[in-house]
Length: 462
Ligand SMILES: [Zn+2]
Image (tube, protein in one colour):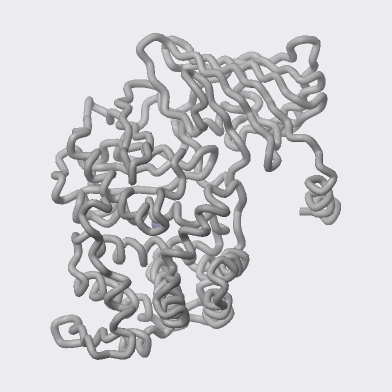
């Protein structure tokens, strides 16, 4: 970013520019292959972009209500505030071998041309669908066929699905969360009576961290997937997309039993990502680390792992992430190949989450914990439209607890090569290595904190 642009970004919000409200009418054709868009823009001169869209793929494109449109490079410059275009609904760009996508399944970034959005700007969308077709879109629903889209971190490619969708609601700590079950290729379908209780329990466990689920507008999408690429897990793949509204997306083996799904950590891990705002791509160790910590803690609290199993999984992962010579620091891990440093990326942040959690409990005599701080973070700041810097997030966590814990951990470990050394901490918690794994020593100095971290929830909390 140039200096001028940087200065403008600081000045504009201070100058109190009013928020823009843009109106879009989106109409999907009966064969689900094309989309017509009429955009009524709130500013007289705007440059529109679609991150993976191409100007030359626009079937027809013109100004409306007297407006003019020029194309330059990958932007459409609209003068006069009105644009109409027709374009193809292209298949999702990064398709996977499982969950094969048809043309109905289109990342909206290839066809939704948008102006730059500042914090309070809103795009209001009206969606017209052919009869019998349902849609799953990464926009916030404001009524039948009506949606709003605002600035978001833009991580991952937003997904818009038009076709056969089974929609339902997950009830998470009494609040609804929308669920979409999508058919796979060859008529592969999922059993909602198996999927729903599994996801309700996993999201419910994440909601117990701060008392409510961190984003009640999140959309949960589930598609059938085969366990070809990532081993034989009942949930071959899951991820969070933060482009438009937050989407938590899972691929599930159609034959997976409720028991196998419940014992799998993927759902708790993915939902736990929503406990933090989106942190910069090159600091993935923070989001992956906190989610990896909580996947173990919450499965123990939910009674799916025993306390011992959860600690055993954490200690094994810490040990395995500490193997290897010449490791990078967590902040530099992004410069290596992902497969070489993936254990460090996932578990350095988990070690820091554990260190911070114990330190908060210790210094506050059990009144504060990572749970209480993340609960406050959700209240003040989530879901966040911004991309956060790691240290900024740690600073915020310390402000929210009033205890300087996370910034000192960041300063000590973020730029230090290798895994944070957890050996002394584990010993103080009473987690001792043995030939068969670990043994737990209840007389250790931090034994009460160890027990509190993994304490079973009453069943009603689910
Ligand atoms: Zn993750």
